[in-house]
Amino acid sequence: MLSAHTVSVVREAESALMARVPDGTLMRRAATGLAAECARLLPRVYGARVVLLVGGGDNGGDALYAGANLAARGASVHALLAGRGLHQDGAIALRAAGGRTRWFTDAMADETDLFDADLIVDGLLGIGGRGGLREPHATLALLAANAPAPVVAVDLPSGVDADTGEVSGHAVRADVTVTFGTHKPGLFVDPGADRAGRIHLVDIGLAPELPGPALVRPQPVDIASLLPVHGAETDKYRRGVLEIRAGSDRYRGAAVLCVGGALRTGVGMVRYGGGLRVVDQVLSQWPETVARLLDPQSSTDLSPGRASAVVIGSGRGTHPANSDELYSVLESDLPVLVDADGLTLLTGDGGAALAELLCERTAHTLLTPHAGELARLMEADRGDVEARRLEHAARARDRFGCTVLLKGSTTVIAHPGAPVVVNPTGTPLLATAGTGDVLSGAVGAFLASGLPAREAAMCGAYVHGRAATLARGGAPISASDLLDALPLAIQEAHRAV
Ligand SMILES: NC(=O)C1=CN([C@@H]2O[C@H](COP(=O)(O)OP(=O)(O)OC[C@H]3O[C@@H](n4cnc5c(N)ncnc54)[C@H](OP(=O)(O)O)[C@@H]3O)[C@@H](O)[C@H]2O)[C@@H](O)CC1
Ligand SMILES: [K+]
Image (cartoon, rainbow, N blue to C red):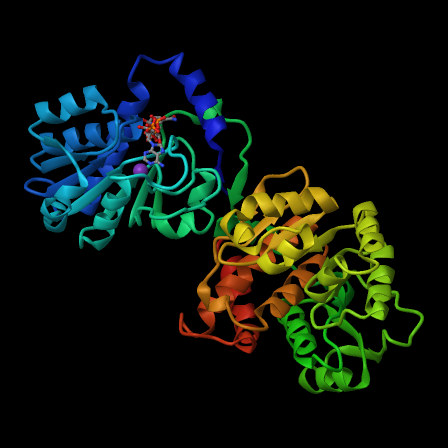
């Protein structure tokens, strides 16, 4: 797992380490790692034109020392200084190595060396940045974005909030981010993740001082170690029986996609309950389903029966009878995934009783909202949820005491008492109707196989994202395309061991 720590934790670890090493050691280590990565990006260092964007803090200091390193190796290094302060020792080191410095003002926007540069190093702000970029930093970020050279961000792209990934206004768009000591959460979460490019971690000796991470990002090998492995002795019950209560006579597609998502993820058996028309459709598409007629509007026994897990909600409806069905499911001691209409029911009449039941559950329980659903659930603003995904997913986890998978540009999984998980396989290809139904089926299959909610969510989100990319080699997909690609994504993940 890649791990990330918040700014306050990094600062504490940094102070503890600084007390044990000579002054300037950490910055030297950081700058050496940064210069090495810059050198890798240049065809050759000698004669290369490097422009440093330098803010007033230590982030600018890192850039200046790395620039000095490159200048000493024959690069032509030019620092544009911005902000109120300057890392004096860094500037002296750069000049001593033959580099140049000059203060940038907006009026100089047309006469910078940015457009002729072979490499741009963004040392405007690091973990000391607060709020949207002020001037002239914002203008420099814009100029760097329009220049043809690759951009290397120092520690994180300036303008990205290190703890949340939030971007207000302009932010640097980096090709590579060279980060120090540990990853910062904002590098893993959109919109910040989208600005970071490839991330390179430089070891500055901080690890022994760091507590457990605030956030983790699983790697292929982590997923491979979690995926259920079925030996020769397995049977359909050991693979898991998933009860699906998604879709309705009105929304049959949700049922077909959810059932397909579960079957193609390798569940032992899907049991489906619904009205006549939806049952017909599910059976014609997936004849291996064990289906029965079950009309939440009239039936009295809505309990899930003999299954290993239940998925409920998508396209199911929001009538009071659907609320009764959700109540029966939540009353069971089975692992349950609640999606879409199921989440809406938590906010409507009778929602309080459902929420109370949810909070009392001891079996694995997973909510899978998108930003709009989470906003409704938590009475928040949708834009705010999208801008600060970690915070809102964690709030919902604390409110309901269960696992919350927040879907979207960066899918995040918040689970009580554990670091938040960020899924690394997200892709804009998934932003089409019905992909959420496939996801709930896939995660449900992992729950039914016996994985705990957090791990089931992690595996489900991972293979779902990979399936989107594999389905058509990166070309646009529809939700149905995911179904054929899911087995390939799972096979690929197994091979990462
Ligand atoms: N921690 C570690 O282990 C190590 C840390 N290291 C490095 O130190 C970096 C942290 O340095 P830091 O603390 O000096 O803060 P930094 O990021 O340079 O920003 C402060 C400057 O930004 C300014 N500013 C703020 N917001 C702004 C805005 N919106 N728009 C415009 N300006 C804004 C602020 O100005 P002020 O608001 O104070 O006027 C001040 O001048 C860290 O990211 C890493 O690179 C490594 O060298 C070694 C190991
Ligand atoms: K930076």
